[in-house]
Length: 510
Ligand code: ZN
Image (cartoon, rainbow, N blue to C red; front, side, top):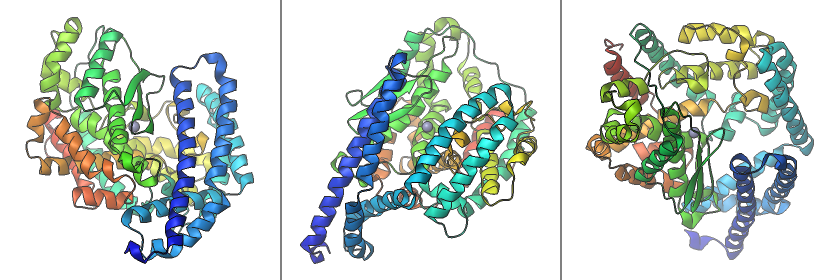
């Protein structure tokens, strides 16, 4: 089919990819600076670094919004839409067009106003949270919402405004697709949480866990997962993250507490899951959309799968627990594998999302999804937010926040204008369960492999079925190709029922 392309179109595609490559390369330079800022940079450098980042952001934005890109996309409109390009070319044009049009639809004044209000609003949020004073944050939230509504209206949508924002993070997924999935999830989760709340709480892990030993252990787990330390690093930061400049340079961070080993270990496994995705991308397509990762939800599925389906499983610890005891004999010598397994899977409704366990976590997200959607279609006023938030917490989790700092003010996202972002966390959990089930069908002895400490076959399955595909397909199609099915909430629900039903001796909650 490609032979039917005129040379002009081939040249247009080559030029488009070259311009995109320059913008992406500049973006990756910015990522190096960000990584340095979070891990190595001395505190006095903040202002100088801001200068560097701001100039780089401006140059990158110019590169990515050149009129020439628009002209090239116009030249390629026919061949790309008519399927005259090969699948890689088509996907590259689709993704470059998507981000170019998003940027171009927003007037510079709106972008600048957003940046200004967001930085002020973030400061206001920090203060309001510290004193639990929602009223002080409310006017800022109103402004942010107003600006984000303008963004959504400029970008456009077919059924509801919220979709325009969701599309930024999870292309091809609409709020109306999520609604029935999330409703099913809520129906299944609420009774599981109630059942667990009535059961006795597992014993907590206590003791001293020297940080240097935690680091060594984390490194050996990441290596066993197949992370290539000749193409990556593990460092320390206040908030753990993973960033990538190229598949040959992927940076992970974690944090350590001398009295808690699980925080750093599961944090490391989580970020390593993200990192394996980045290292698994097809380097042949580096600096193009097809050589990049898919959506936020797909990215999060990779971290959650390794952290939860693998890292919090009994199979995993039947191999690793003896090593953990040998590393921390004083703290864990008298703790049985069963007690340890129960402790790392403790389920308890709480106020704070980031501290929530596997079961209650998604109820925190469902609440935010429902609230965000209501804010955007005008069903909910900012002034009613705290009341609505607390009522939903009681309804879903059975706990009422003592104040707004433990409630509606807890997350930074809204002060940054990040609406439509939260649902990708739950999508990540749903994708993870569906992918892990598919990997289990492809490798019927997956559990035994994990119990033997063999994690590479799983990494390989993910690499072939997901990582190497980059952005060739939109997330819903990518999931369908990897698992043979569209997104189904049942995999996650079954996973939770089986695991926590056994752990907490729950009668069938079906
Ligand atoms: Zn993550």
